[in-house]
Each structure stands twice: as C-alpha cells, then as structure tokens.
Length: 432
Ligand code: BJ8
Image (cartoon, protein in one colour):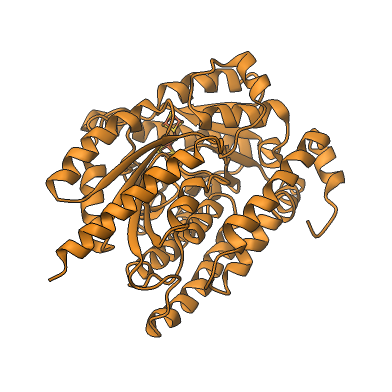
C-alpha cells in the first residue's frame, strides 16, 4: 500500500498481526487472477488501484467522514436501501465476507455446518481484521435466510445491529410490511446520524445511486456484444467494488471504462476471440475476494458475460423512480424497488428463473453455471427449479456447490471443463 496506514488501523482497534497476514494473502491471488489477463482495458487501472488500497485510501476517507461527525453503516444484503443512508448524510458500506476468516474463533460461537459467507463476516468481527467493519457505527442485518437472521443476534453482542424484516413472500401484505420496515430504517438512520431526511436529500440520494446503477447497466449492456469487450472477472470486480467505493467517483470511473469499451466494440476487439463460449453465472453472491469460480471458467476459452447475482445484475438492474414529491412518496418507491429483487429466500421466486431465460437470450449465452455456497439451503434447493425451467427452454445448466477454500478447485475445474466441452460440441452440432 502506497501510504503507511498502520496508525489509522491501530486507532481502529485492528489486530495488526492478523491484519498483516490477511493483506499478505491477497496480492499474489490478485496478480494471478487479475493482472495476468490478456487484453485488459486500460481503464481497469483505477479498479486495480482500489484493490491495492483496499484497507488504505477508502478507510481514510471513512475516518475523515467520521471526524466530521458522519456515520458509517455496514450491510450484508442488497435489500438494505443505501439511498436512505446517503440521504441522512451517512456512508453505506457493503461488508465483503468473501474469504474464510478466524475459523477457530467462529466455531466457538457458531456451528460448523453453516454457510461460509456467514462464518466469514462473524470471523472478520471476531478477529478484528476488517477496517470497514471496525469503522461501522451500525450494522444492518436482515431476515433473509435462517442462518443470517440468527447470527445477527450473536453479532449484536459485538456491534450495534439493526435488523430489517425482509418478508418471505411478495403479496400485498408482505409489501406493506416491507414498506413499514423501510420507514423504520429511515427513522433509525436519522436517529443515528442526527440528520433529518428531507424530500430533497432523499431525491438527490436516489438520483446519485441511480446514476451508479446506470453506469453499471451501461457496462452490462456492452457485454452483450460478441466478442465481449471485458472479462467476467473484471466485471465482477467492479460490481464488488460498487458496494463500498465513493458513489460519485465510482460512477465516473465506470463511465470512463465504458467509453473505452465502446471503442473496443466499434473495432470488434474483445477480451477473447468471438468464438469463446459465453457463460452466465447465477447463484449466491460472490463477495470480494471470492473469484475462484469465475477464474476457473475464464481459464478456458470462455467468457462470463453476465452475473445474475447480488454482486451483479440483481444489485443494479432496477432503478428507483426519481419523481416523488414527498419523503413518504419517495420512501414508498424505494420500498417497491427493493422488493423486486429476486432472492431465493422468497417463496415462490419465479422471477429469477424468468430473468435467466431472458438474460440467456439477450447475452447470447451458451450456458449457465449455478454456483451456490455450501449449506445455503435457499439457493441449493432453488437450483432444481431453475434447472427445470431452463431445460424447458433448451438452456444448458451446470450446478456447482463450493466454499471459500481452494481444496475443491481441481474437482470444480474438471466439472467446469467438461461442461464447456459439452457446450462446444453443442455449438458445432447446431452449425448448418
Ligand atoms: S438478496 S442472496 S445478498 S440474502 S449464501 S447468507 S442466503 S445461506 S447472501 Fe443474499 Fe440478500 Fe438474498 Fe442477495 Fe444465507 Fe445463502 Fe449464505 Fe446468503
């Protein structure tokens, strides 16, 4: 890291030795997964810089915000409306949870057989190695899956937690409950920041977050081209960074990248050849630095063209209407927008399979890879339903189940390679 941030980390109460070990683990992986790619767009330089400074510059910005009396709110789910945090003068940070952390300590407070994402965020808190977590004045949990909703009870022993009740269905009465949860969250955020949310501040926040989403949609749209102008790995990285970077700077940098990609598209220049297989990835979120499956797919002659994930299209495909007059009206629009998210925690959840069918056509995908974390019942069970729907549309699907370790990389590689081989044969067979 360019500057010495040790003093800042110490003030935040980090365990400096454990933190050093974490930082040492990241760079070689990043070099291997990211920096070795061919035909990378030059504008990825900014995103490389953000990763290089992952515990540096952005953390410093958060501390400056806090020194001015500002508050930081951490989240684990795309159901938490960042517009509200922003409108109340706070900064909203998605806490990553994409790496195994402090397994020994975690197993003292949680059973072994639960989802790695949940273990990861508990591990980060217990080991005190995440400066984002340690910067949070409040963490927002949600009642999505059983594991998360119970773990937030335990997490509240270590940090103030506000839990939003996310309904499990999408009937009118569920929408009404969710709307009231969003209103309560707004009140709790105002109380924390000491700033009243006004119609003007909320409208502005909606516009700014929409702008971020529009930039990501522009990027997603460019990936419909063949050859794809950017790799899935780079796109995923940008989608992961979207969760915690400064909103306006991030938006501007994504647009800069898109301008470069548009020029590439005009010259028919791709990250791989136009014959590369086109894959969509769906499933549980791929939180930073979980790049394992994307890397395995793209180590072949294949490119991931879309992520039907919460670190992907589910995060940015829907915008909030910008025309509301009052705080109440805009809050209602925010609640409505968030409830459109097709998370497997809902029952039934037909929208997700329908989205995948549409995406497969729009992105000219050869196949879809359903990637779920182990012990994630909602996604593992829903995979069967997804498979059935896709089968009906003749869209090939590979279902994989994995964790944050590298122990299964060889076995996953074999299965992914075989799936891609099958897709190649299918393509050949369909040629006249
Ligand atoms: S809206 S996907 S971000 S809940 S992987 S912790 S579901 S056992 S993360 Fe998610 Fe919100 Fe839904 Fe998206 Fe539980 Fe499954 Fe673990 Fe999960």
